[in-house]
Length: 295
Image (cartoon, rainbow, N blue to C red; front, side, top):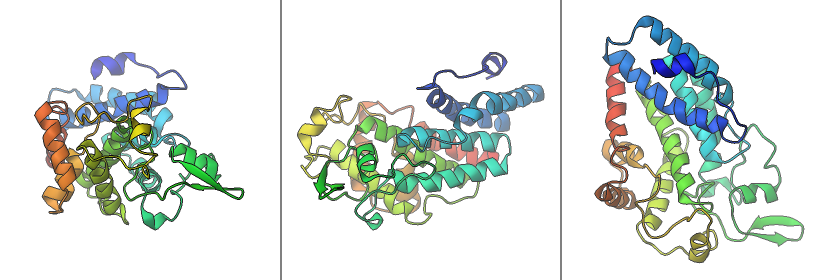
């Protein structure tokens, strides 16, 4: 961390620069919290320089989120912004991250309570039309007169990126869940804000169900053949190659609250057995450590 804070001055590129800043800051801030609060090896001057580094190199690219794009970008940046806010003891910035998260979650995970269409992201007019909104969700459409409507009704737990591919869903949901867990450590319960608990649990159960081998019906994104022909390879009946990390959410809703999440439990068992998420599963323990060290 000292080496990077001494050398890195900016992230470049309009396409991936902000995303890279979000990815890096997510990891940097968690590592920095642990080292700062559990070790005496980090000099005060180094901590100060690292704080300046976070504010100058990362924050300008991520603090407004990415509401006009895919949700995995936006949620990554919100996660990173919250981490910077905590490390730098910036309460207004923390509150801003919480507000952005509350705005994005219903625009990333669908609930039938939302009505016929998904919730539109706040902070942008890019999805004001039904055409643009449903295209952003990659959802099959039909025309009723001049109005664009969903060809099939949307289902509880659907992610804005489900019909794109599960890789990006995994990135989005992981960041979404990590924000909730980080906020919990700080004494803020986002897990059960509004109807978000139902959205999150329905989403991890929905995606786990198909990772576990259920046949995808034609009413979900067009069906099995659409998924198999996706450029990124949405689903190949192997749940072990994807970036899904539902462990933190499962730990909260199933272990802490006692909710039944059978599809998620099965998916996690398979993923663990294959070893693909072995390192990621340590995040739960990491958060518990942070809870003790940083409260």
